[in-house]
Image 1 (cartoon, rainbow, N blue to C red):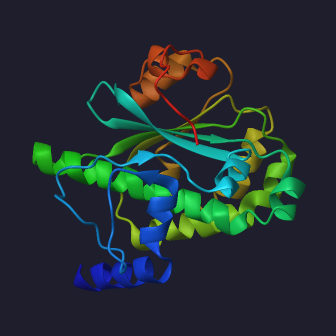
Image 2 (cartoon, one colour):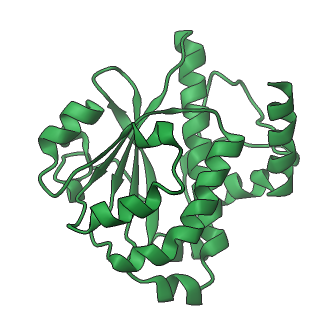
Length: 229
């Protein structure tokens, strides 16, 4: 545990986690070496990107922690939107590193939110992750190197925080892409995944324990507070 902790601190300092979190949101602060300031059982960070490049990244991938939404078991719910259909734009604008930074900010947000809830409830709290891939095409194969980098970061520097991963609005060829993704996904994570098409209301409820009404309006829900960025 001690080795993991100090290895993580070194990584946080090397990637300038302080700057990444500050450029993607507000409400919490970090030291230069990547340590969190403030009381660990409280987490008030909110996404508010301050760099123009984050808007370019949002064409391809966006994140949100759904406010005031929990699964039937009380777990926080996190939403990712991944639209892998224009890798040329992704590459020409040099978004590979910006994508990783955005992912680091999101997984850092998720980790700190789950950590604070775990401390408050005095038990381990994990999260429900929902991924919307509507609009993705076979061009998504070209994003795999960036997805591999992101997956490696999650495995190396963050503890297990996932209860389930529910993919919604998946196109017909999603099974083919998933076979490729399995090459870079940990086996435990694969066992927690479920892929659903456009009619995902029942599957979302049974797999993630989340009502469709709690989703943003673009997913057929009534949640107007969720801001994707």
